[in-house]
Image: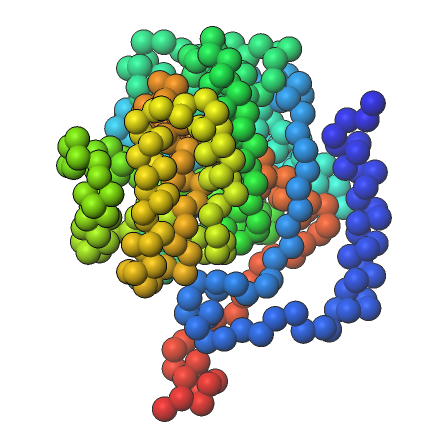
Length: 386
Ligand code: CMX
């Protein structure tokens, strides 16, 4: 059987030809109009990116999973109150020392071959993420009293992640994490972690530095950190309301959050205008495996109440829950209660999607990304305002 790399290489020439032809025949077609609101509104909805997906190979990753000693040392030296996402970003940045792409570039390699090195780097990074994450977890939440066990080369990627975190004896949790890792890789190109990785990669910066940029974006509370924020907020809600989990008490709490100028974490989305299908996949899992978990019940009650409150509030374009409104509740059910670690798990999965794209970017020879910027005075002139 062919390896993933051979399969990709075999498909590449036809894809390059397809895009060449598409651009030759349709290159001057207008695909979008841009309003001034979009310019000031975070480029929301402007059609300007291309995004695709590839599959993964657990076995290959297991074989590449060993960490260089200096990365272990670096992680071990991080103070426990440095956020795990910052630690993850540091460790991935440090992996750049062994970057095959940067070395190939320095040798003067032909740009047609870039993707092959980026592929190797991407596989190496993904392979090492569970060990890095587990190291951070043991250091921060087990006071370094334990270290992650070795990767089992005959087991799948997610089993090894769960096992290294210390939960390997729980088959149901491992199954949850297989779902989790699959769901969180899924994305389109415009979200911050995907776009940041793609943008930095477009300068031919290494896959390590590009991914670290994506992780730095994922670490924001409006993006991946929302999974941490969501569970913290649910717990705070429970502690504040006490035993009276009536619809009225919860609705009042939702309003108190909104009226104090905060967002409801886990609700809203820049692109979706319905309940996030990834939320629903997690809900299906919860209904099957933990229907009586009190936190799941609270999440379900919010699902019933929050869209109405957000609609009355009248600001958010999408009053429905996103992926981050649900994941924390599943993790805590199986004993992974350290919310500060949650976004690291998101990151491990997200790396697969965004690095796959970086490989494709280099294979298709995408250029450096460079939108044009104007001052407000220039925009005022452009739209003919006074
Ligand atoms: N609670 C309160 N207000 C919200 C809201 C929420 N959950 N979601 C959106 N709004 C507000 C926005 O803050 C914005 O207010 P202002 O006009 O005062 O700035 C207004 O509604 C319009 O926002 P929008 O166009 O609907 O949404 P954006 O594209 O600007 O933002 C998102 C999208 C996800 C950042 C936003 O919905 C939000 O902050 N949600 C809560 C945080 C969250 O769950 N993030 C995770 C998203 C998924 C992920 O990336 O992992």
